[in-house]
Amino acid sequence: MYKITAKRLLAPSIYLMDVAAPRVAKSANPGQFVIVKMDEKGERIPLTICDYDKIAGTVTIVFQTVGASTKKMALLAEGDYFSDFVGPLGQPSEFIEENIEELKQKKIIFVAGGVGAAPVYPQIKWLHEHGIAADAIVGCKSKDYLLLEKEIKAVAGKLYVATDDGSYGYQGFVTDLLKDLIEKEGQKYDLVIAIGPMIMMKFITLLTKQYGIKTIVSMNPVMVDGTGMCGGCRLTVGGETRFACVDGPEFDGHLVDFDEAMRRSTQYQTEEGRAEIERQE
Ligand code: FES
Image (spheres, protein in one colour):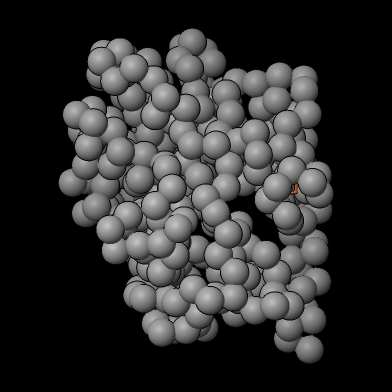
């Protein structure tokens, strides 16, 4: 059993939880994820790791209540337990294998949309701990939905905020802001890492392709077993079939077939919808 040691509401319907899972915390790296289950019969919910404390043995997860299971999960309180907390799963971010001195020469910018700020944070933090100041754009609907501003600001080179309604920072989408930084401010990025809704990642990759900037995306398709056996998280990357859970979740964004991935995740929403209806009945 895995105890919830802290719980916090970050924004409307977005929660943060610290979970005691020493073995997961010990081997966690940025870019990886966990699969949690509330009880024996519960649905397996994949969640990206937002932070980890190898000494305290805790892993931080952030989730938004989007369906029946996550709504149920939001009812858990500090002191409650998950029956399963499996991880770390997936491949760590590719940059952690790179030569640090070479990485220091690169200008890196992260682009996070909505809850994507959660998985972006440990990556920027890891870079910061290795002497690399990456910039970040965090986009959300309005100021109330901005996540982890203080935490990201503390480890990023520069933090830019974009809100759809202009209630804070730049008014507009993260794609527009990135375009302005490149075109109007003459910023020359070597690497863009985009994490957020698939539609956002798709448009970021279309933009960066024009400038020839390498772009990594973190894919969040349907996941069931998380071990490459069920095929639920199947994607087409560079014309080949890849599984987000074992080959990813991060891929070269310019090679991902986003239209196919979005079609598949819409099918999943129907399943989620059914589960929600069953819950209410
Ligand atoms: Fe089953 Fe990836 S979640 S193959």
